[in-house]
Image 1 (spheres, rainbow, N blue to C red):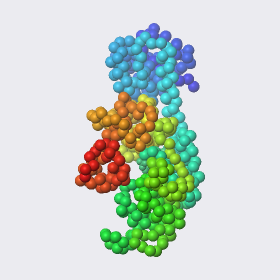
Image 2: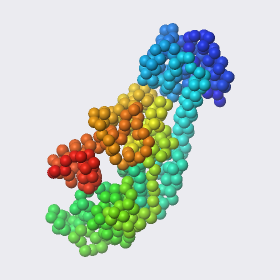
Image 3: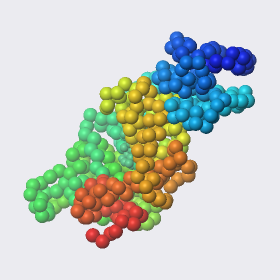
Length: 471
Ligand SMILES: Nc1ncnc2c1ncn2[C@@H]1O[C@H](COP(=O)(O)OP(=O)(O)OP(=O)(O)O)[C@@H](O)[C@H]1O
Ligand SMILES: [Mg+2]
């Protein structure tokens, strides 16, 4: 089926020339001689692209852009103009146009832009189709992504979930490790049992043992009553040991025994308690490197890594972006009560251009922020740019250099709208740390707990940011 193009051009000669040329290229062309007529045609039919002149009798091409965009958010608008090209171009793009041409232009140039816009459109349709197939994928799987990498991940999860084997989930921050752990539990025979999550980095070292294994009355000062730990609470179900890389070395032998023998001892207790628990461990660190540095026991690593699911960073699976974006738009609708139909083509272009150092979680946040700003049926590029910029304002105030948030240091530009995400994330991190320290009255252990990271991790970050460690 030929792609449909709507031309809005008052100069009859130019209009007919363009119509003929594009028809020769097998496009289905409709022409209007004013913006008003163009709007009427757009209302009545579906077009892939609108090519509009700026100076028109009545409403100008620039004035028409927001109306055209509101009427057909998935139709790309290309503006062509012979006068004050620069100002008009900036204005046109700001209002939501996809591209701008200064007359005279060659047909070859024009065709490239048309083809690019159509390719984007094709992607959008693909998303609709994939969403359909996702809905048909059956129960239990909430992991979005139809690219080869995520298909492999989902296939692996389906295979290992019903087994009792321990699973190690790895991937950068925000890649979906917890979601994978959830899914493993849901697809296992333990689905009706408890699913207990422990963030090993968030619990102070001296408390972690009793949190995990429980304690008997009087085991230590403050242990007024006996208490079951996470292992016992997960009886018959699954226990997620999140941020396992931050598990203190001193606790690792006891954990190894619990994983191997499925038996534990409460702190201060002598009895061995059998625990019927399936372990899933997650980390964004490289455990083998940690084990070379003697920060993680090798034997524990091999015990945990019976089956391993590794999640690629989002920048390496951008083919999943359209579908993920749609997924989060849907989630935002549920959360905020909005009624967005999706993201517009130019918003998609913005999303595709980003490197996503914060991976899927960052994408979810950007979409949510953009949704708060939006005011039409689709989230547009304007809102996505603003959502990024909101992130970026603090970064602009200071000239930070290499931030090393997880993934942020990796290749690619990391820039969107000419602003650097990496620096922003670094700035956001700094602000959060200062805020936590403030709240904790300068006590680092407490600040680390508030931040949900290990004291050691916090210490490293303080060094990185050059925040005084004189507390
Ligand atoms: N493939 C996916 N499909 C749908 N949602 C996803 C996907 N991957 C991640 N998410 C969502 O992104 C957010 C972050 O994911 P999650 O918490 O699982 O990441 P994580 O790898 O555990 O991050 P961290 O290392 O920071 O703990 C969650 O809201 C999760 O539901
Ligand atoms: Mg997590």
